[in-house]
Amino acid sequence: MSSIKPPSQVELTRLKSIAERLSMAWSNLSVSEMLQEIVVDNRFVRNPAVVSSFGADSAVLLHMISQIQPEAQVVFLDTGFHFKETIRYRNHLISTFGLKNVRTASVDPLAIKRRDPTRRLHLSQPDQCCQLRKVSVLDRHLRMNDAWVSGQRRAQSATRSAVALVEVDEARGKLKFNPLANFGDSEIAAYKITHRLPEHPLVTKGYPSIGCEPCTTAVQVGEDPRSGRWRGKEKLECGLHNRSNIIASSEHVA
Image 1 (tube, rainbow, N blue to C red):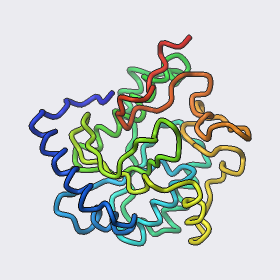
Image 2 (cartoon, rainbow, N blue to C red):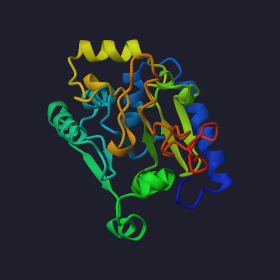
Image 3 (cartoon, rainbow, N blue to C red):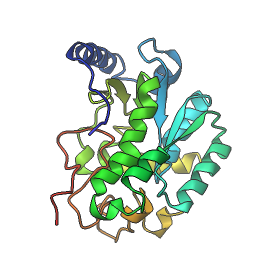
């Protein structure tokens, strides 16, 4: 759940109207054309932020962005629990792609001191940990943005099967874009090969989906790619995407 005051119904109605118009106008665009509209051309999309985990498939969207607008704002949420490989990969992609406006959004140290001074909140209350280290951080950062861009794809998991190209983030009162929503795994792999993109070092070690180190494990052959996230819990998402049709909470699980 978002920690900010939800927008008014009037504002949500306005945003939904814009989302519907953009969905129709962009229905036949390629991903690159859609990104051009979002980060360069479109008058409905002022000051967008590309939010990236710099995870297993993040290089695809970031490479596309770098080819269109390397000065586009990219936001990395530093939870304080990332794998060291993820931090190195982030730095490598920034340098390799020539991304010029990558911003690190960090947790408020006072909030950490108050709510998780021993850094063990994830063990007993993983939802509260995600709220503290991800959701609240994104809430705070996006106050200055009118829209944000996500790398979500329908093929990633059953929980993301309904991801739309253009959405309204109702919790934050923002337009939200998922330009890779229609990309399948084969298209992601082909793009990586064609453009010789650097691979996240953990992928070859069995991590097809990479989050915070304490809550991410390797995946065995035949398992769902996201089964290594919050293993042993019913929790399926961190809560950043505010979709009511998924299990984002695990606190009722023993």
